[in-house]
Structures are given as C-alpha cells and as structure tokens.
Image (cartoon, rainbow, N blue to C red; front, side, top):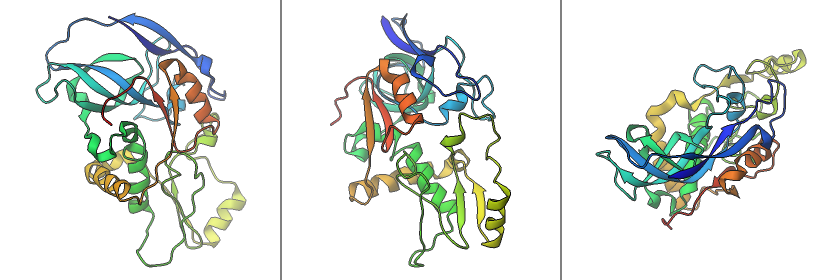
Length: 281
C-alpha cells in the first residue's frame, strides 16, 4: 500500500524562523500485513503545536522531547480510526489517539501506544481531542488548578497573556499579590535562549515589590489527573460552559503551512489539520 507522509526536510537553525519548506511530503510503501499487538490506522486529524519548534533543532533543550531527524517522518498529537487490529483491546472502527502519531495518511502502530477515545465525549468532534478536550485543555485546567491559587467566590481577576491560542483561549494568570503560571512562551521559541527566559532587572524588581510569584508548569507531571480532567472538560463543553475555537487546515500537504502559520499567530484557538474524513458525527 502506498501512503503519504511528511518528513523533516531541513532545520531552521536555533535562531531561525521555521517555514513550510522545512517539511516535505513523500510517498512510501506500507506493509500489507500487521503483527500481533499492532493496528493499522487511518489518520483523521493531526495537531501542530509550539513545542514542535524545539523538535526541529538537533538538540531540543528538553530531556522529555526527542528531536525530529532529517528525512524521517515527523510526529505529534493525532486522532485516527482503526482499520485492522491484532491488539486484544482495540477493534476495527475504534477511534484512537496518541501524542506520538506519525504525520502519515495511514500507519501501522503498536496498539499499546494508543488510547481509545469516545466520540460522545466531544459530540462527534474528534479533533477536539487534540485541543480543548485533550492536552491543551488539560494544560489549561490543571495549570490553573495546581498553580493558580484560585478560590471560588474570592473576586479574583484572571489575565491571559496570549488569549488566542490553544491554551490561552481556555485559561490564564493574575494581578497584585498574584501568581504567574509560566507554561509556554512561543515568542521566544525561535531564539537560542534558556527556558524560561530571564527577566530584565526592572521587571524582576516589580515582581519582588508586588509579591508576584512566577512558577513553571508542565502538564506531563500530572498524568494522574488526565482522566478526570478530560471528563470535566467534556462536561463543561456539553453544558455550553466551555467555548471551543479551532483553525482547520485540510490535507497532509499543508502540515508545513499550518505549522508556519501557527508559529506566526495565524490561528484562533487550536490549529488542526484534517487528513481524512471521519464518520463519527
């Protein structure tokens, strides 16, 4: 079987701006048979995210992120449907997701690395599992819960520094005697600087004077809260309390274009690329 995939064609450099041409679409052959424990999936939606800019460098600067290799397939968050299964917990027609989904039209994957998802949680909008009812939503929810120091009925103010993106459209930060939740800083990702970038002396002085705390937050440190978090986000969505925005591109050939656009603020809400049509709605 001949499929399409997207590989890393070139690196932008630690201080360079990524462009669509850093990626290339090519055709490869997929085996006709699968082994025990494997599933063949058709890709429905793929995610492009700011953290992927780090994966374009030879050294990501983070021990939990492996760099993409030149001429090798890129990967990230994805949702697809099982077309063939030799895994005991997955069957043909199941919808599945992974944080390490290859940028391919179809793929043969280890079933143990996939998580089955229920379309009813998102009213059939499977792409939401890559956004508000997925990792970005969990980042916003758990980040506020764990680092926001928010109390119901306390008349606190929440401020979002970048309110148009996947996470920023869902959660935020605060004011005097406040707590800054530092999670992502896309404006700095094209620069070879440490994360988090050091504050200018004048800003540090204001931080001390106003008793403002600044804490890093990484959602991967709270995996035990993922399942209840997804159920809570789904409930709020169904109750109309959570408004979800997406920017949708179409076609595997537009992965590079979508990534470049996301890195320059071209998206409102989560940037998604639709690879093929689903039948869940």
